[in-house]
Length: 122
Length: 232
Image 1: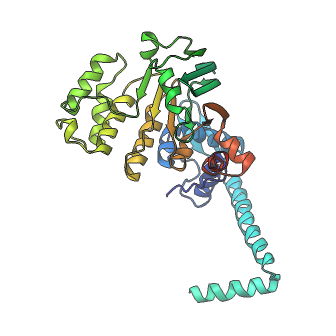
Image 2 (image 1 turned 180 degrees about the vertical axis):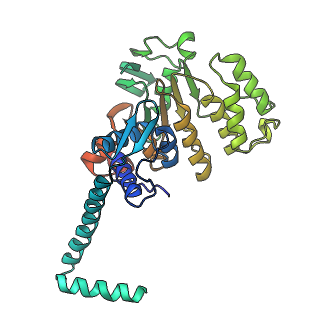
Image 3 (image 1 turned 90 degrees about the vertical axis):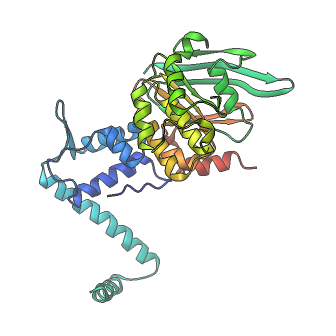
């Protein structure tokens, strides 16, 4: 999976979000060992200090943890991952709803558009 | 964290032009720092002072506590704007040359990087394109285990793919004790790898801040901020 960084938001926040997305989508599975900070930084083409900061942030939320001798791992707490998934999706949907409201659409209209578009995709 | 570079009220004049004026700058170890400013703002002058090639008119400069000189040059790895290696040298000879010169030079790293970039060490420098010559120079400079790397316009002449490789080389080759100063105006290309930026305008330091702090506060990229600060 590619790392995509825009230039407006702080880089470490974008890294946090993208690692969260990888956890939610199952690219990183519960209990998986993460590559070293240096390797991840090289992959994402960012400064190792920035990647370290992203890791610290993820650790604080309990999504990753460090085993002093063995390295850094994704949490095995599936409940926590589920909760993250719910929050992550809620944020995207909220963003979408806000945009639709700006266009003057009500809830019923949004749902009918969604249905039409999903039907057409099939 | 310990300080690797300390400049105190540094001023340098060339005749009637002031190249640097009252620059106070303190850089910590373990950081990648962008030295940014338009043409003629004093970036190269500052780098040359760090390397002892120019002497400041007033003010002081300390590298790991030392004045610029033989001892400081042992721990500073410098990539100048212009190539200084003789054309007749083969790449392998340039490597031996660096090995003779610098105690902290790691030959194996140089050959590994050459190999990854598909560069032939038996070629003579004069047969290489401008961009390839730049890559060779950067490989030489980054193969030292230095404490401070001063890279003056390291990505100017190379294509975007090689640019990515070069940035990667920088990220993976410096260690926690070392600081890298990159002078450039190709900001968009490098801003993701920087810890901090230093803006110089007409010889004066106008900003020194962490990149993520700027993005958080200003909500814009370093590139856009640069365009604002230095609007012509």
